[in-house]
Image (cartoon, rainbow, N blue to C red; front, side, top):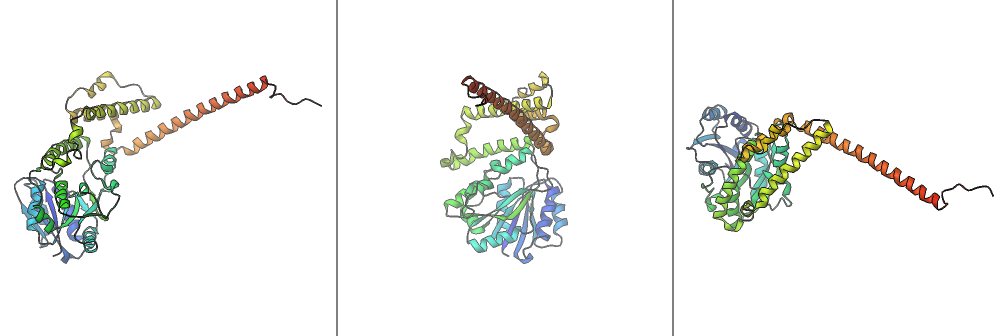
Length: 366
């Protein structure tokens, strides 16, 4: 057994079934090369029956369960249960590409004793929203910032799609179970392994598809958890205080940047409304900006009131693009008209000046 896929799961049986079927029955890698260990982190849904239905009578799919202790503890249990020399971590909402396992095995064969980070893309069935574009460019996955795929930073060691030889996990002591949520527990482990000499490589061909559309509410809630986890991370590794955003969080500029962003966006919406000939929103709708001190709820209320039927969390990316295109056309039309009028005025003024000096008259007969 060369490789073990560890899939921690919690109350996501609807997606888990598809993930396991793709891993078990639709991989290009030889069935003899890998096994799958599902770690149920205390689910209360249909997870056990889903695993049984997908796996029977496959012995390569094994199921274990623990009380709800978080993904770090679940991955540690999966690592202890694994038989493979290489451990591939992925998520219960990550639908694997057909070549996922084969590409990870190939990377370890060709690059040596390294950590391997694969690519995570949004599932093609999901309709892209502005929030998803934002998350895809560094806010959640930092693949766009990778300059050298042969030596990537520990900050990109995402357990949605990464593999490592098990001896690194054992020598580093595994995932730190003080991290109770899916936030920084993988990055913190990678930091400890890099300090021990691990090199991490990035292989885009090792691909999974994230089948979990985020909403603004969930994103803000998760980001708040990340802030709490950042403090846990910082207390264990004080040298990373600046990198973890601990300093910025204590500065007034962080709060100011939020209000600047909201103000700029409200202005952009006003420009859009005027170009469309819409009337201003009533005063009671504007009150959504200050009606609730809770950032997640107030922020969500503002987006809902400001966008209306153009709410980006409802998958209206095409409409937003169309509005931006119309805005650009209107701007170009107005700008070109002003340039024409300005150039016409300059030309008339120039001819007037030439006539004053007698240079603009037509030549008479000799």
